[in-house]
Image (tube, rainbow over all chains, first blue to last red; front, side, top):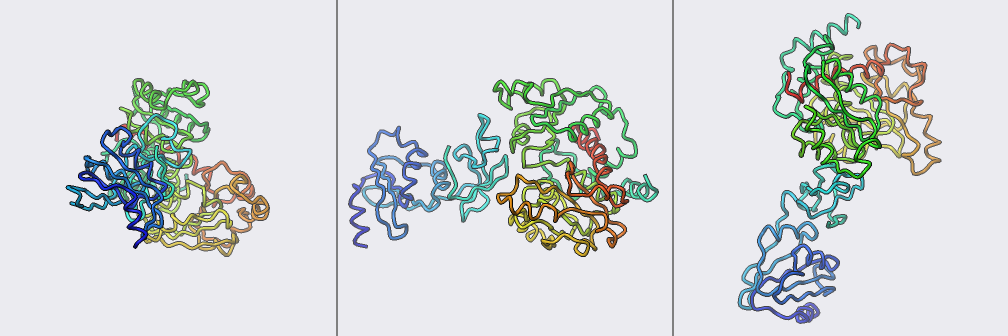
Length: 154
Length: 324
């Protein structure tokens, strides 16, 4: 517990904005890319490899003065279903949101089947989420299932 | 055609249960079809068997786009179009087309759909036909997309079973050979789920039916038994034996291939104690998994099976064009 508190302190608090917590350490920059954070001008703090009771190691991203729509957030569930979004207002956590897995994922994930048409044509990938608990995706085109751990972003 | 076969055809034709919904036009896989859809298509196939030459497609142009070579399927589809009075354009080798210059599938489909009323395509990439059906203004029939789907083959397999057994319900079906990679056996499980079959899976250890398909059987209440031996005792209760090729390139362990390659061969002497209604099917091409001496046994049905492909494809084409 003591250790976790110290880690929290490594990252500066924000007055208003969004804190994305419980990101697997190796997915931190995927989250940055998915949310388009490289083009945001408000202050952003990115922490990786912080110790976590739940996960062992985790990442955290704090974005000042910026809130995200459900649609934007749902993309994140594809790479990290356990991410938690904290909405911060006046230094307080005003809301804690788990991210719901969408029914369908369009244009974010690459199909892991090298013989799938989506890897050869300039077209959008589409996956149906067939198992929301385990985050398994099924390609609309070749029908192959992609387990959560094999999900690769485009 | 024997008297019994004629009676069965008559039965199929007179059975009013065999009707179908004509709402969907492209045929990409059989997953979306229900029992009535399947029986409706088989009934249509029977009408074409009774009278294969009709001018239903008069004035229609059908494109056969074979990005991957396939003699049997292409000839069967093209014969079907010709017998229905339509005309065929297309190619049988993508090397002679603009796709070899880097043209996208989308551009090829958009271009060809300007000329043709229907596109029948085979492609080496999985999902190609599904994608084509989403962008094409004319219907698409999938004549095989890589290791994924080959619905017209499954329909002709079903038609062959219906014709030889007089029913699809409650059959004892023995699938033999490569059950791991064989797309025809996988599609058959999907299509037969409406007909209360009992499957017997007979294969070498390395080529067993994948877990997800066994799970599919359990979910759909399909009975199945697995066997690692292939002999006369195992097949004594079979209504249908569906043979497939055990291919050398499928083995990671070539020693294992050498050990099992001759264990999954059907020989004529194995058929002595089998049921009189048993018929042997094979999607062809055959290599050595069915001995030549089986060919003259009346239970061998694989060449007639291929012929059934013509009638089934006539039905699929007319259905895709909403002409029935």
